[in-house]
Image 1 (cartoon, helix red, strand yellow):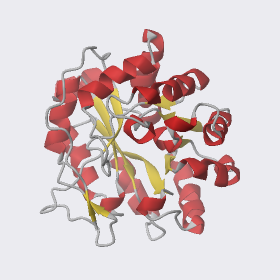
Image 2 (image 1 turned 45 degrees about the vertical axis):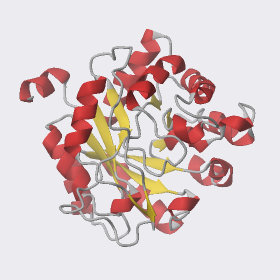
Image 3 (image 1 turned 60 degrees about the horizontal axis):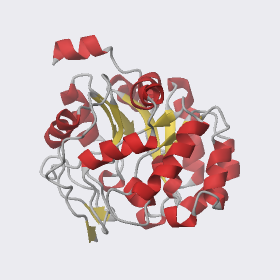
Length: 297
């Protein structure tokens, strides 16, 4: 079983100040394993990355909100993510991993605790495509909750599953710019298909995971043209996140402060950054008002 490297322990202070209410729309918590054990059938074992460290990072970077995405190493046991949401006191929302055994009552309970979507992995090194009957069943059931689905795909999956994706009736988010490969250029077929997909009013995309797209080393500037193109294509349906603590990175661990500064290469327009970092995640995740959050803090 693969072990993951820890995140960079010394994130730089970003050169740019983020707008009020800025959201890290893709981050994780892992463990601690002594409280929240990892799934027996996991494909990797991360170092513990508890919510305390996530909150410290967000405070350091100037991020007031976050979306904690359940990762496959915890399987369908969402308790670490739910604990983090509770401890954030309005600062965090969540995206769960569920299976066909979940009841409507359990879905309603997840909603009450701050979950607003489900995630399905199609990525080969994480086990490949899910049971598509379960996928369809879960999507039918979350429709009444007005949730969305997050799709973690390899680049070629955008082509392979395009017909099924276009039949989805809830908002759907493509993780990590579809994990396209920067060395293949903007004209590569998976990226052109992703841009075509963004014509669908239910389609969202996260312009994060630059280290997964890049052919080079930090600060991964060769990912910027892909992010800029996606932001221009659907400015009201794009999100950004750190992907902390960066599981399964082997070539060059990102520095999260550098990732914030790279974001300004993605988007040099203040109005678009407001949408990307504040307005879009607030609309999708119905965060509490900032004033109420600050009063609790």
